[in-house]
Image 1: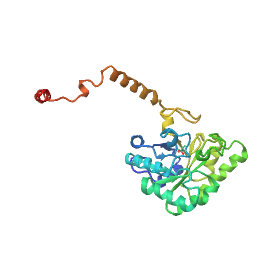
Image 2 (image 1 turned 180 degrees about the vertical axis):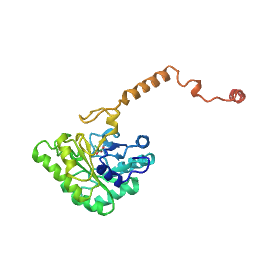
Image 3 (image 1 turned 90 degrees about the vertical axis):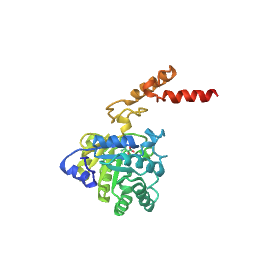
Image 4 (image 1 turned 60 degrees about the horizontal axis):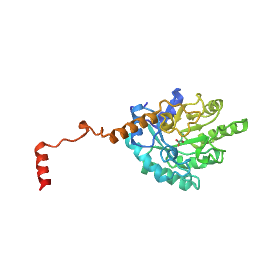
Length: 283
Ligand code: KIV
């Protein structure tokens, strides 16, 4: 996919065709452009921006205005992939009416095509209402970062049979509510497979093993731009932080030593104008 605009239907078709979906996060214009150029299927403007861009401890403090601001920047650069806007904590938890209004704002003001929200069975009525209002919804179950403290921290979910069964029930409830796909985060790989088999919509895993319908990673983790902590399920395909640090160190040294800017980075002035200027200054 991705020479043309990826649609919700394309995402659903991928599961039928047995083609793995590729999803990544982006929070700004340069990464939006790179996601587009890389030709991924789906770009999530995730509320993980709280941690990897805003320097917060978690996602709870991220608000609607932050999300809209970042979605707009990504949308400007990213034309092919389907763009998902993440609903921030407490933007869909207090009432269905508010949830629909806020989902609409992410689309109308931010410019994303679909929204994502966290939660299982309990959020099925909210999802159903948003879908009925004409807004495609991606679910998010397993480890749900916005409520991580209630889950005992950023830990693997579905450890015992009962907890694992609940996650399968959550997936089925989300499918019945009308999601077009769902994220499944931090569960044992065999459970990932069972969840993907239990529903017809694509299940996109992050720490859910290989036997799901696609993968998503937080891009800043995957490229080693944010390495305060690296979850077990993250593969670092490169480590750009040390590369940037080396460049910054070199820049600092060259400025301090008067090496930068050299003639090739400086503008010239016609000799005649310079002579005239000097005479004017001397007067
Ligand atoms: O906010 C985010 O980046 C997410 C991913 C972890 C899926 O929800």
